Length: 434
Ligand code: LLP
Image (cartoon, rainbow, N blue to C red; front, side):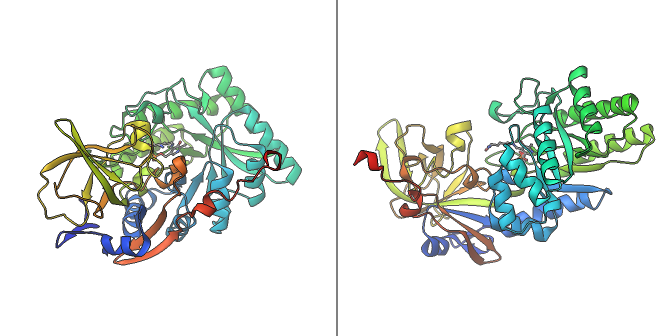
């Protein structure tokens, strides 16, 4: 438990807020985000990266947690953001995010999304291939604007994480394969284009990583490519984006400090550029999960409990896979507590399940909690700040819960809970069916 999580007389406090009071005020299920923890992560990155090396930036991968308020925090903290859809970009525009500090990723950006990006004047488009380049050129020509681009490459390295969140291997829908004739044609077309300013390369090797090996391999591969571009076209690559992927603590994992990943990559880049004899490039990292995961908890109210003799006990909560799909989708593991009974002995092994009509709707399998847990108690799950709210759905007709931002004992609602009316507001009564 880090210092934003406290036990005061058996009650869970989060960033100074009594979780039972939060539940009284905002209801459950509830996502709670700690501003203190988020800012702390940004400060760690400033210390070991942005303030340590010149010409470096953090672009928060906002797919992890995308809300107007999160963009407000990023804006105030001076970071850049990475968006991956027109919807995320629209949210950033609503937050009046400085356009030059927005970067746009995605393997199949729609023309309408590129139009919105070019119109708003965003800082970078991370281009995934020649088809996209030609759409960008077309849109830029139409709007008489130029954009800065990087190419996302597929470095062809394997990393150890869940298969669904490994992205750097050769067989991937992301990025441009590094076969010489393929990538060099891309580079040439971008250099020659009058509508784009080709800055460099981007890679992202995967997510929830604890070993820096794939990052280092990918950096080396990117630097070799940069050298090739220099030799073949006498063109200086001015920017490298190293992606995100830094692992966080859900249960027993030991989180590595950012330096563990960043320092050796930066040393490699600096050495290489010295040898090339050209000016150091801008270096960008794109962390998502590691900024927000541990800054979030989910609060639920316990409902029915069911003991299947000699098998298991189920403790049901009023949310589940619609507000946290990660256990069902990736077999992700979480830790949790009965928030109003922290001082009671954990003398019962239970499975905490959601309310959906799916046997796989188990939030935590086999966790030790107090045997007195019963309907009306509050159950808190830790480290749900990343890819929880952002992957939420209305499955089984469950409205999307509210999000509250907390800091030093104060709370503010940043996303209202969806009402039933809002949940079905786009549904129409078909005239032909009357
Ligand atoms: N940059 C790019 C291009 C990415 O595709 C991603 C994540 C990131 C940065 C941020 O990676 P992070 O620092 O968050 O690991 N829904 C999955 C995670 C999908 C990650 C997709 N890409 C999950 O809940 O585990």
